[in-house]
Image (cartoon, rainbow, N blue to C red; front, top):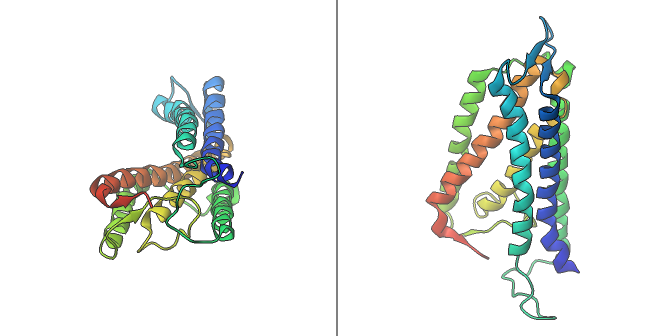
Length: 240
């Protein structure tokens, strides 16, 4: 039973985000338009006719990512290590107590939930009055995030010869000796914030649009950095 719960933790988190994102994207596609109400100025409509790029990214793009997360969760579930034989668990390289692994699972899930709420609260009208994001900020963020991720792996590579695969049940702040766990938890956190912000999207106006785009650029840059970093340091990744 405990082994099954361990295997279900990550797939359930992925499935949750997949369902939320697919639902947001599908609702936007079904409505066929996105209405913006700026703080100053006339309302704006994003649709397949007016501003189609923004419409398709925030509708079909979000829906596609959500749909892809669902089979990914199933794949990860069946790829998770099982018991070698009936009553004989797979040999683990760690002797950490069970309570420690459960503690970090709950802590990571709580961090992701907090990120959803943070993204949602940061797009509140009273918060948006003090922000001024734009396309340049989004571009700079998308370019610099991969540098941060690759730099994290580079610093860790100078201190250890191998990187343990992430498991969602370890301390995510041991960056110098366990960078993949940090990046793994950071991926869900960076995804949770734009999801939370997108939930308030129709009523957030133009400033809210660029704020949401800023959060999505953080996530996209983080993923791009992981792909680059994993390609560079793939020989250092171990299964233990």
